[in-house]
Image (cartoon, rainbow, N blue to C red; front, side):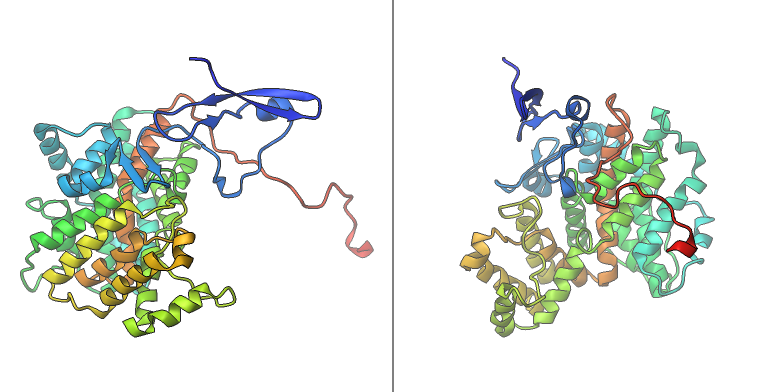
Length: 429
């Protein structure tokens, strides 16, 4: 097959750049030699048209509303798989056999406890500290507790660090929650599955027995699965950029947690739930629809539209069905917030304004309703996102470390400040 070439003409000169093809998705123009050949950079704020790496982990087709983990559609994994099986898939590239999954589950389970001295670390935070602030600090501090898995040149240490992060992140998240509500930390239990163990650590207390509902645990597992990875999003790119400097894995994941904290990224589900509560009743929806269309009104419909998806977010479909099941199980199927969400979605999918702009409901639209119904405060929503996304960050980090083309990240800029000028003494200014 003839190699495709892109031609760039500058004045009377023409430069050739190879066009690279992936297994699916758009071709990319290889401009690594652009500066050397032309003395020019490209200008791409937000990197919306730039591929900074090649990856075989996750693929998104925004126009079709398609999300694949290692080639498997997200709806199939949500229906038939489990979060730990998805973790194995993202980390190692293939679905595990029964024996491999059992071994992986056991390995993760045996690493869920955190170093006992980390309990004292939590007490350094104010009692009203936001759980994401706690998560950012504690995850970064893991490098101070687990020295034997910070050498990124050692494949075995990278593997140990990966398992530790996946196993301990729910424990740390549960501790952050318990600290925020003034309750004692609850140790993990090896007889529970991943999601059930997390719920038990969050909601059990020493004074009485807490029984984890299998249906609620399944819903939690599903939320983890839907959020496990999402290609080169802001937090994943942050992890990769941090890792490009050869920083230890715990520091890289802490950087991802910090980036995820932003309301435009991981905090979107909290914003969507707050919006639904602000609307309050179905009768007030037309008022807020009108406000959303008014360019002079700062109000925006949260949970609609996506940077990548120009079709219905495939995760939102699964989340919508899960929300109905969870609220039914908990006896709150007539929840006014859910009623507002359902009617708002119906109107938006039929309204020409939203249809023309491809503002479909995204995964954040329903996830906040589910998490709130389970019992989590809004301050914990992004923490749960971080727990789920940890495996994606780690898989992407490991892939980058093993990439022979790896280079330290160094974006360029279009400088529009003052040109060179002479220093003047303070008396002459």
